[in-house]
Image (tube, rainbow, N blue to C red; front, side, top):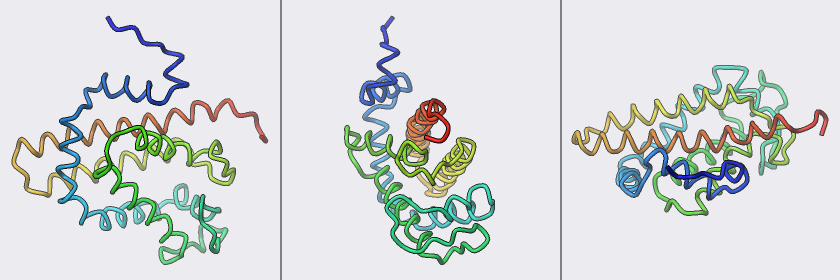
Length: 198
């Protein structure tokens, strides 16, 4: 039986990621399957991004977050969910970020730099990022991750891959999105410890 330093899981990101990948069986074969799918998935990223934003725009609970000042965005902010339109600059800005994120998932080496980036994706959606105006409730993040996971599955199934390659890709992306989900949820655990009004 392997001994795990549980407190260290909360304080040491590389250690946490190593534990998760080992436990889930996310290994070099999974990374190869993800990278192998990249040439087929990359051209589909714009359509996937559009699908995500079409979904987000359909609910005030998700769309309202784009009416607030976005991390790194310097342009105009509408301030009202009812004024916000798909053609607004802030939406184009966020779409670019999502496209870059999806591209990184399928092309970047799975090293410490990428793990830090995946962790920041979780952190940026909470007040811990320093953007007090952006605090996306965990239920909305879970809804989004579920939608993205299903979109990946649907996209992979549409590629007409041979059965072995398709199975490897589906399993690899499933594990990857669970890894990302953990690196989102961990910041909500810490968020609950933030004193009100801080």
